Image (cartoon, rainbow, N blue to C red; front, side, top):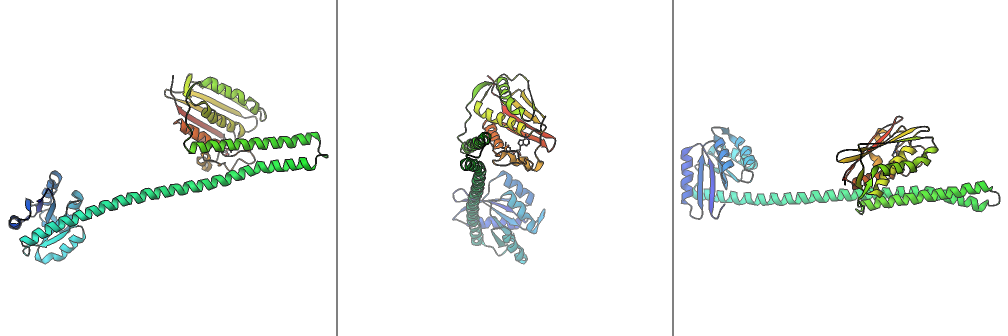
Length: 386
Ligand code: ADP
């Protein structure tokens, strides 16, 4: 509504009625009205699509639309426009129903006069504007409520995760602590009775338990750093093939216990790549360590480095115990272990760290595993070549 100029779309098939309304509007001096008259609903819709109006005056008996069925079509075409329906003396009930369904007001033809028409038009426009404002406020409020609810759900999840994390951490630290207490107590109380070999064994148990605890604390602090966003990629050029071969070399000793064979192969000529060496060591070290730990005696492990156009792929395949399908997804969360690990030691933190390190590089990790058949982990990292 520009100033006091009101643009009206009249949809009315009766020419005499239309003329009468036009005359009434011309008598009004408080406002200036521009009336565009069409005879069919379809013409009205065309007008609404191409021109701006302030209000619609709608006859409920049109050649191409009868009764209330015109209303929803007009409302969906111009949801913010007020509608005043025009009815005959004998269908006032229909008019009331129209107001219930979204019209702002109704006028009974032949009873209407100039003042009544102008009052109804102004009132309908005001009312619709108020409704629009309310609808917008409502919408803004709804968005805020949704945002706040999402925040609360997230905070709740974080709190729940935190308390689970703490209880699992204390449980996992208690285990090596108990070992230390037990072994130290045995050493203290049976000093004279223990053979040198037994004493050495107990001391070794203490050392191993302390080592495990220290490793767990390192891993937890690593995850903490990643979660608080302090985990940044410190990129440097790295010869990936040399790096992988070194890793294989370092793993040789741990293969002996179970008489495992580790086969390394490199494809695609990766050469030098820009990656974070420490994070890469966590990724590859953990995956290789797991392949060794969860392999069966005399088994084989295949480690492949595959250079692709814009990425590099690290593939670890073992023929070990496998991961049950239902456990595979949650393995990347801290302290999660599959149900088939039995007495194989572990904290359930390794894969969570691997995932964080892969994420920090903007890469991806995939697992393919079957119980009793074996497991393949594939890490793909985007490659910045020098
Ligand atoms: P951890 O080995 O200390 O338990 P990880 O986070 O490294 O913790 O691994 C989580 C779990 O995923 C393991 O407990 C094990 O159930 C499963 N898993 C990981 N790698 C393998 C693998 N190569 N073969 C079988 N299971 C595996």
